[in-house]
Every structure is written in structure tokens, then in C-alpha cells.
Length: 241
Image (cartoon, rainbow, N blue to C red):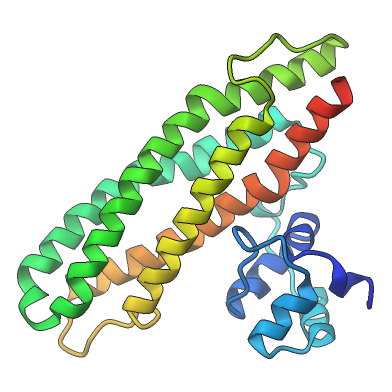
């Protein structure tokens, strides 16, 4: 168990999907902040590491796509999952939340301007960044990874990519993941953990609920890429060199 607490949060989340729900419960960042050890993550939250490990052992996720073994599944299948589960979600949800945010601001900004005005600003900036991010993954990074895997399966070398090493676009994506993580943390802070005010209407509540769902989906999305897809793709390229 002493060895387990020195593993990074990201490594634990990648190896054991059940841990994700426990990390979410305790506010431990397993995606953008997943490179710190479990011991250090627990220290920052005032949590006893062995107790957290026992909680992870006792917890389990329902048998579904969320508990698939992405460490051994083909990278092509993992990319398809990210596209159909997470990219499709963002393409649908980001415009809807933008419309909802505008509606709530129009009705409630006079009384709640200190929260709603900066919240809308940071959300719209996040929306623009994510839309660009999805396009770069779909047009650049994912095709490079698919080609790497196809070449490995055929026993040959992957065709040269205009971006050079797969690590080049990966670094860009990880930087943008960090930026998204900071925006999510700021929105959570602004809203007091997405707690609507007493006078908040149903639309106000729907906005906060939707933003909280967005946060949870992005955490899982970034985790699959930062902790599983990207390291596996880098290892695949390295093995072929």
C-alpha cells in the first residue's frame, strides 16, 4: 500500500476506473493535475492516503463503457469512444449552455452580476478554446495516432506526419487541457460549487446543473487523453523508432 500511495493520481485513475468516482467525490484532480502522487494529492486535501485507497478498493463502477479496459483496447477504439462520447457531447452541449447563460444573464444579472458576468465571460472563452481544441484533435492528432497504430499492426513504419513527432501535438493538447482545467476550477469557485441562489429560477438552476455536468464530462475526457491515449501513443511511436 505504501507503494500505491506514491503512484500518480493519473496512473491510478488509468489502471482502475473505479477510482475516478472516489477522486471526484473528494475533489482530487485526476486529469489535468494527475501527475502528482496520491500521497501529495491527499496531503493537499487533508485526507489519509490509506483510507482513500481502501475507499477505492471498496468502490466499483457499473459494467459499461466507463469501465472498459482502455489500457489494452486498440487505440483506434479509444479514439472512437472519445469522439462519440465526449466530442459529440461538447458539440451539442456548448451551444446549448451558451444560450442558457445568455438567458440567465438577461433575467438575473442585475441582482447577481458579481457572479453571472464573469461566469459568462469565462464560459464563452472556454467554449471557443474547446471548439478549436476539438478540431485540432480530429484533424491533426487523432489521424497521426491512428496511422501509428496501423503501421505497428502491419509491422512497418508510420508515414511521416507534418507535425513531426506525435509528442508535438500532444504537448499542445495537454497545455490546452490545463487551460480548460483552470477555467473549470474558476467557474466552480464563482458559483460556490454550482449552488444556485435562493431566488434562482428553473433556468438558473438548469444552467448550473449543465455546467456541473460539463465539468464532470471534461474531467473524464481529459483523463482518457492525458493519462491513457497520449502516453500509449508516445510509447507506440518510441517502440517503432
